[in-house]
Length: 124
Image 1 (cartoon, rainbow, N blue to C red):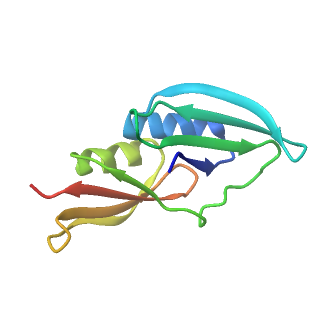
Image 2: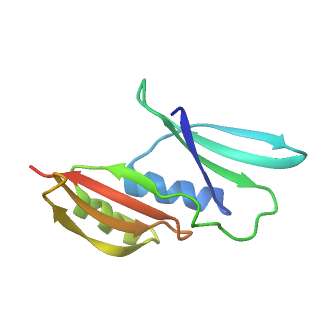
């Protein structure tokens, strides 16, 4: 996979959320059109060989669509991610819990617009 684009309605607020919670760094912005509809995107830096994370906004979009995709992040500090998510305007929807059969701890949060995010931490 080359990239994942998440549709949002408030590009800057969403960028602030993902930067403060997951430490992503903005690489550059794109302003363009798709089928005569103006768009703006923020592409975040990615390690070579990894997929790029992109926040995407259609001009005139007034509400987020939060059920189309579930983002997945892997971390070594799931408690820190959950705390930063709440501080940044998100919410914990399912507390992190160990799943030893899969070798991970898993929990779910939402971002500032209600998009569901699965957070995974490998078990030691």
